[in-house]
Length: 273
Image 1 (cartoon, rainbow, N blue to C red):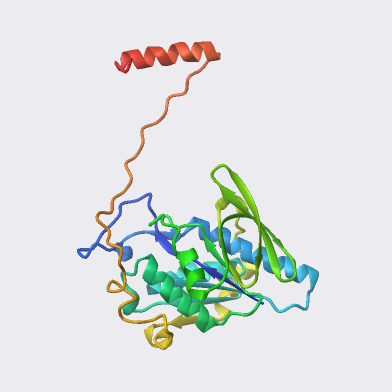
Image 2 (cartoon, one colour):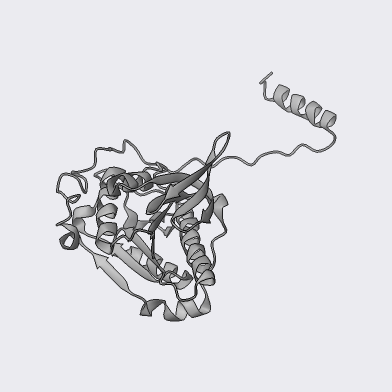
């Protein structure tokens, strides 16, 4: 069984956002982290592998992490290998630079087809990346691979050929039974990601690590010059900026009645009432 996790190295948005002249992020000059939701997706994959091996220690199960990005993304992949992933794939090439969600999903879907899917493959993605917040790439990958998808997953129960998942909504949740292969996007409430282990750190560089460049993927029908990179990206970023820092809040002490009196005094002082 192959369990594939799509991950992304993102700028640390707590710092300053650097933008190139063409409107794309200057990622090389910014501190980077693993996208938080993708850590939950990785933990879901590793937990599923652990569960399968508990039931059948002889089962063949691999967790493969894949990302698209510059060479520096290798540090993130090695960290995920140290967490317990079995293989890592870096999709990197100048031709892929500047891709929006549409183009990125094209490239990642082609990479997943190159890795190879099995009838019981599960693909995990984080809900969304903190640099774009679109939540589009995971569902778009599923559409291009023509497999079922469930987004905003908070709970997973595995059967033989299906998964029963709890999908969170704004005002409730859904229970969905989905056939394999499928793609799930994970939210933070699904689990608590594990840490790297000492053994994982010692052996991570002995695990398979592959780089897919443009030459490796160009024969896939999804990879065309007008569907990848800046040329294949219909989305244009008007402006990128760091979110303004919010001021510290003020706690009101005392009973509810006293808090209400304090609140009215504050609003009157600020001439808001």
